[in-house]
Each structure stands twice: as C-alpha cells, then as structure tokens.
Length: 240
Image (cartoon, rainbow, N blue to C red):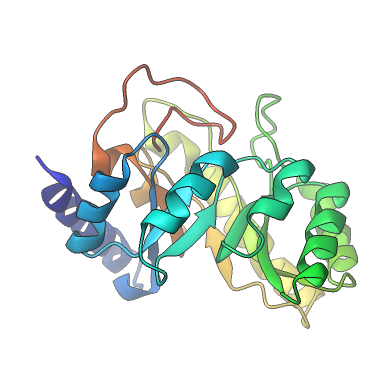
C-alpha cells in the first residue's frame, strides 16, 4: 500500500482506539516520523493530509525544512545535543526530548537570542532501560519546576518511549504510568501547562491512545519499513 492508504489505516486504528477509551479521536495529534524519508515522499504525505513531521536528527530536519511549505509543523523527537540547539530553535513547533538541565539552559539561551519561546516535552524513562534517554520518574517534578523559571522555554508535557516488544499489551503499564504522572504533576504544578502526552509509535500507538496519549509518533506504519532498520537515539527501530 502507498502512503495515502497506510495513513488511512492508521487513522482508522486511532479512531477505534480513542472510541474504545471514550475519547474524541480528534484530540490525538499524529506526528509522522520521517527519518530517512525523502522529501518527495513527505510531499505525498502532505497531500494525503499529514501536517506534522517528526525528525530524529537535527541535520536531517535542517536539510528538509526549506524544501517544504512554511506551514509544515516540525517536531524534534530524537535525542538533542546542546551544540545543535541553535540550528532548530526557530524551526520546530515542539521538542519532545528535553532530558537534562544543561539542555534546558541551552534551549533557554538560544531562544532568548532570537526572541522566542520554545515549547518542549520532558522525556521520562518510565521503563528504566539503560539504553534509553530520559529522566527517572522521581526527578521529573523538581526538574519541571526548575525549568519553569527559565526564560524562553515552556514545558508543555511529557514524552516516553516504551520498550520494543512483540506484544504491545506488555507496555500498557508504561503508558498508564506516564498518564498518571502528568495528572499528578498538573496538581503539583498548576501554573505549568502540561497539556501534551507524547507516547506510542508504530508498534504500540493504539495501546498508547487507549491510555491517554494525545501525540503519537508513527513512521513505518505510514511510510513502510526502512532499509537496514536499527536502534537509534529515539530508542526505536528506524522509522517509528
């Protein structure tokens, strides 16, 4: 199947999962993961109705950005190094992978230089896997409270990457814990707009939607498997 057919199938699955959970399917934002996807294929996705693209690598985002319409919504979903923040602060709608105080300060500094407020999600390592980035759950509350004091940066929610397992039901507790965490944090930190919960990829997004995700990051289910899939800094096989 092509991109349009794959996208239709993904939307059908999202709709079914949302309705099963008693949620409005329209409340779930689909971010198409476009690592190693050509600009031509991305244009196909745009024509099919996708308006948000998620890149794992800064270099790839910077190359593609000027080749697509200005109203495209860009998300940086992969691990972000501090020395690359300057290249993307004026290009992205949302950074999903804030995971250190050093990175927060650099985003703040670069945002102030350009007169911007950059919206971010705090990446939480719910599963505790050593191969994944993200803060331990016990550190999240104080971290967010500290970041909220920095100018030019606004925490909008949480992100996590579940373990890649054959049965997506196995990761349901991971998604449930993040949903419960963001609910608790809203009570603890009422002045911070923690509206977004980014969780779920191609292999497990239906479970994530059932457990409260309102941003899902889907690549291979839309664009097909990539050549030579491998683990990357997003903690997934290439493509999502």
